[in-house]
Length: 115
Ligand code: HEC
Image: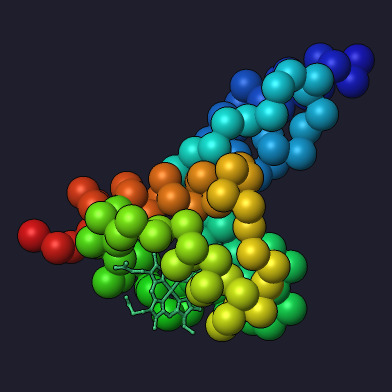
């Protein structure tokens, strides 16, 4: 019964990455993704941040980050922005959160209004 309900829910809303994240499917964790990074970017509680700022507060819609994919210290820069304005905890470079944020920022290369 429960399993059937879960499968039905997962099948009907594949785009709800956050909800799917929390479903204990017993499968391997969802891999890092642009979508996950984007939701973190808009999340004021990112990495334990106690204030109401999110990445989006200062980089609305990823504005100004169109060249960040070239930044050789991208992960460190992201961590600086997490620990300083957000007052959150630095992410490890190989965490799903950091990888997803980097994927999202790299995706801004083509989708930002920089052309
Ligand atoms: C209080 C404002 C503020 C917040 C909040 C903030 N940043 Fe930043 N960020 C800046 C400033 C200022 C810079 C340096 C100037 C610039 O490159 O725009 C910067 C730079 C960056 C860069 C480097 C850009 C480049 O071209 O190399 C990245 C990447 C970045 N931020 C990502 C993030 C992410 C991800 C978050 C959320 C965890 C975040 N920022 C939250 C203000 C902020």
